Image 1: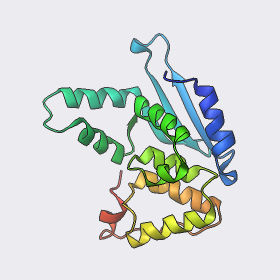
Image 2 (image 1 turned 30 degrees about the horizontal axis):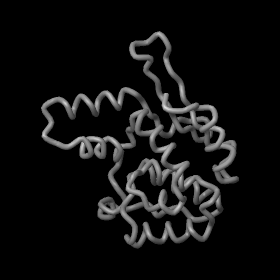
Image 3 (image 1 turned 180 degrees about the vertical axis):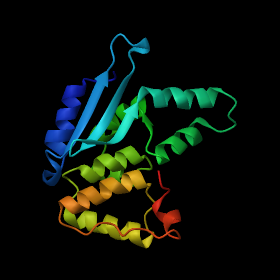
Length: 180
């Protein structure tokens, strides 16, 4: 593993998670010792339910597709998986390291959806900034977000007592992202 998980989890859950989500959002990580390559998985749990699963298997699939007969770039393949809410362990761990070293505003503006996720759940993002983000997503000023990330936006908005994002019509799907 790239870092000591328990310390990073403590920072994410205890130090940076907004008060309204403490106790509701948890980060999970395990390694299957004795399994080939000691594969593992990670997850973000909301109210005890896995909402985003991160796996070494996704890293393997992306690599296999890239090194196979694909004519697409590694970034294109990875983006396809990420848009569907599928992330490899390496990407997740890397995003945590970047997030912890990056100003919150940069994480909010990042093209990396995992950095957006961590930023949306962060206590440093207040109600005014959340309202601006919500307005930007509705108006189209901000880039579209996939449905899996939209769940976390709605979770944070709800935790702050704010109105969730409107449910997009089929015409609006191009703006709000694809269904997983």
